[in-house]
Length: 101
Image (cartoon, rainbow, N blue to C red; front, side, top):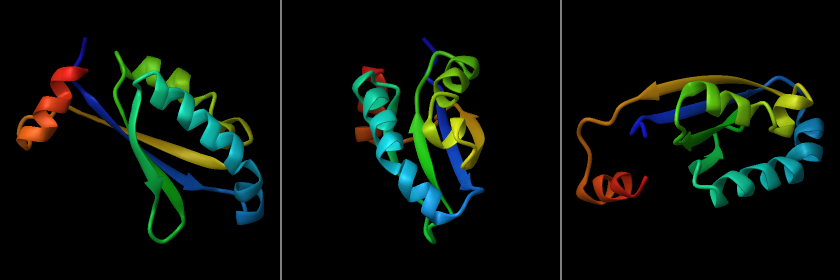
């Protein structure tokens, strides 16, 4: 399995009213993939123009398939940029975390 990490940057392309209406379904989506070990951190950008998800998947295609089930994607509320990287240097606690993946 790859030890690559994905940084997913969401940028809202709809009004905040639509974002807020879809947020509960988006949170359910996040919870599902936290439980499956795909996502390990997420949150809103500051200022609130979108969000960020840190993820681990076997490959980019697998992650993109997952992201295409996000209500923010299916309802065309956000655009996604996905950055993949291989951690080279990290803290001891992060290295221990990566060993669990």
